Length: 126
Image 1 (cartoon, rainbow, N blue to C red):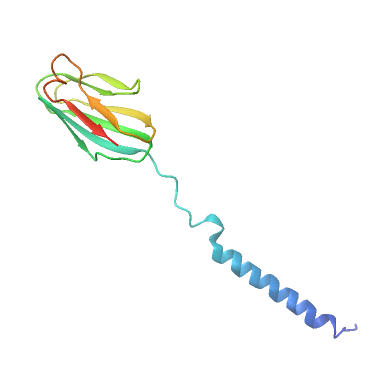
Image 2: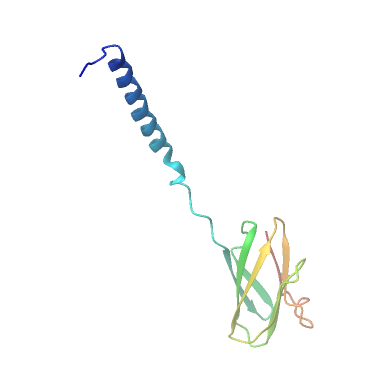
């Protein structure tokens, strides 16, 4: 078997370049370090006579889950103005869930049962 001294060093350089390329690709992570997609935001809504309390009052655009708890003695509803999304009735001490897909912006939230909005059952979320 004959060895060609001229191709030996070239072959070693090519091999070294391939190994270095693998290290560079591994250092880039190949997308493995990317954060998983964020899930829906959750907003706690407390309804009482006559107020809406939101926590948090600001969420990113996308899917939002409103957890609406009626801590009052009267029945209420929950409406996200500017959308077709609402919970028609939340009985006292009951919790309802409402999933909505919101674009960027500010949304008015309210209970529109007679006299409730006027008494202060309104809020905003960004």
